[in-house]
Image 1: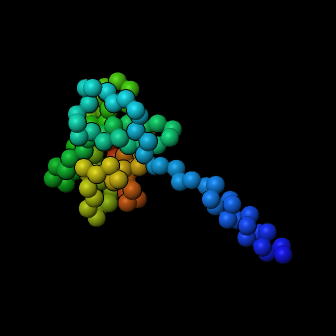
Image 2: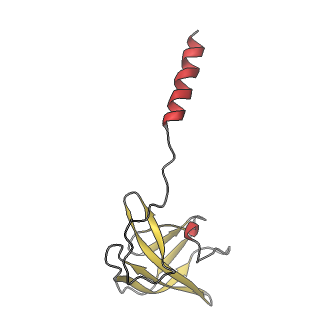
Image 3: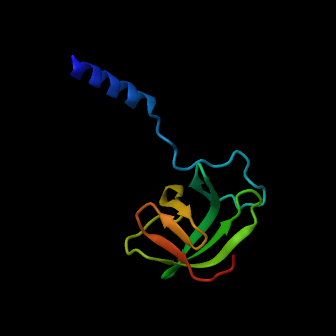
Amino acid sequence: MRRIYTLIFICIFLNACEPVPSSVEPETRPENLPKKALWVGGLDGGVYVQVIESGDSYLGTVFEPKTGNVWYSGTFRYTGDTPFDPFSQDSYTGWDGDILYLSNGQQLISQEKSH
C-alpha cells in the first residue's frame, strides 16, 4: 500500500512541475535594434546579440535589452573547434559582460573591451 501512495505522490509531483523556458524575451523590443539581433537570456534577464563569422573569429554586437544601446561591439574568439550557427537563438545561453556562452558548451570571448 505504501508503494501505491509513493507512486501517486510522484505522479502528482511530476505533473506539477512545468518546464521553464530557457529564453524569455521581453514583451517590448527596442525599435533601434537590428531585426536580426537575437535575444540571449532567461527569466533573470538577458541581452540582444548579433554575431557573424569572420575568418577565424567572429564579429559581434551586444545590445542593452531596454534601450537597444550597444554594450559591446568587436571581435570574439571562439573556444571550440566544432561549427555552430551564429544566426540561431538556440546557439546561445548567456552573456556575462565578457563572454557569450554557447549551448554546445563552448564560448565566444570578447577580444576588444568597448563596453
